[in-house]
Length: 202
Image (tube, rainbow, N blue to C red; front, side, top):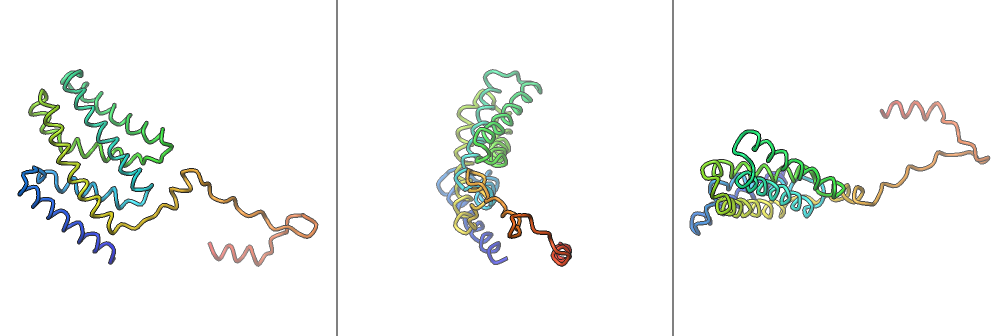
């Protein structure tokens, strides 16, 4: 509980500082501050793969979503079918990135990156599809700044857990010990007491 409260306190400070800086410096981050900072904190806090792979996954999904907007504006019809093709392309890129990395890049982090850009930019895109290049870059800069604030704030207090990553990334778990044998080399019979103790333990 103490770690949770500490993490929450750090994120509160980071979010407040982010909004104040945005207002004073004209960074235009206020509208995406909560979404971006929360997403960055999630990347730092979820104990699945190393932080570097989580960040890479987020950026892959974010970039895939940005590419889909460019395709929608320049090549795909402005219909439900065109939108469906763009969505399918994003999910396919996210899935391929995770698969080709042998799951070092978490699929959830790629999908999170795609969702963050879509959630923060879809309304702006609908209002002016022809200005997709300038508006998407502006939105992406604001969102990524907020994500960076949330990530580094949470990373200061996030517990580190890479044991499972090492096993998945090429260091297999040790094989189970061989069954005990008698002096003649035959497998030893399990006693009734051992069986009862195992049953009680379960």
